[in-house]
Every structure is written in structure tokens, then in C-alpha cells.
Amino acid sequence: TELTSIQIIEDATSITGIILVEDIQGHLHTNIAKSEISKKGWNLETINIITQKKGQLPFVINKPKSDLLKKQDILTGYNYEENLIIWFNEGLSSALLGLNPGDNIKIVANKL
Image 1 (spheres, rainbow, N blue to C red):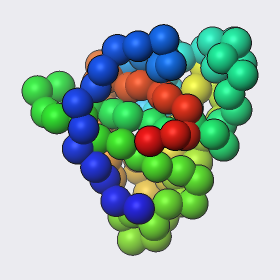
Image 2: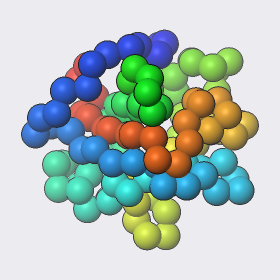
Image 3: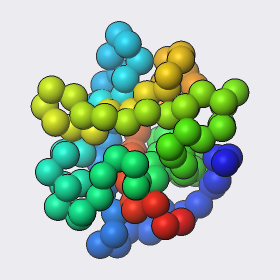
Image 4: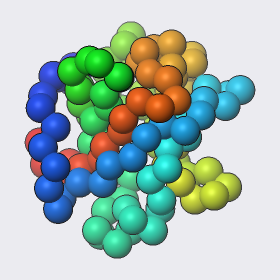
């Protein structure tokens, strides 16, 4: 799996949000709520993550266990506020993805 540049198209099959903060452990916290993901009947193993750094083309992060970026797995979970968080099993997520708070994030069902 590799990073694939695509155009983001808004539709009823996606949830959009932003990266709020990167914590000291390298977790990227978003404002996408667990309830929004559950409402669509998705779970964290059935989503693709589409990210877009300000001023750049969006790209897709396929999961789980993608082999991008030196075979480091992308992990997802929920924080104490039950919002989606994203991180790698090694390294700081922002450094590896080139993303910062304020950058766009979108999740779609794993059907790309």
C-alpha cells in the first residue's frame, strides 16, 4: 500500500474534521467523534483515512497494517473525549505524515 493522491469529494459516505493536537506520545487527535463513526455502522478497522496538509493535495492512508513508511503500522483509537486519534507504532505521527494541528482529515469506508 502506498500514499495515493486523490481529490476529496464531499458526500454522504464520509466524515470530515481537523487534527486538533499532537500529544507528547505522538497521537494525532481529531475532532471526529466515535458516535459519528458508529452512526455510519463503521469501526476503526474498516475505514480509510484521507489527510490533507494545508495547501497540498490530499492523500490516503490505507489501514490496517499498511507497509508505508518503513513498514510502520498505522493505528487508530479513541481518546478520553471519544474522538478519533491516529498514530504510528513507532515515531511521531506529525513528523512521519507531515501533518499539524489545523490540517484536514477525512475518513471513508474501506471501499476505495
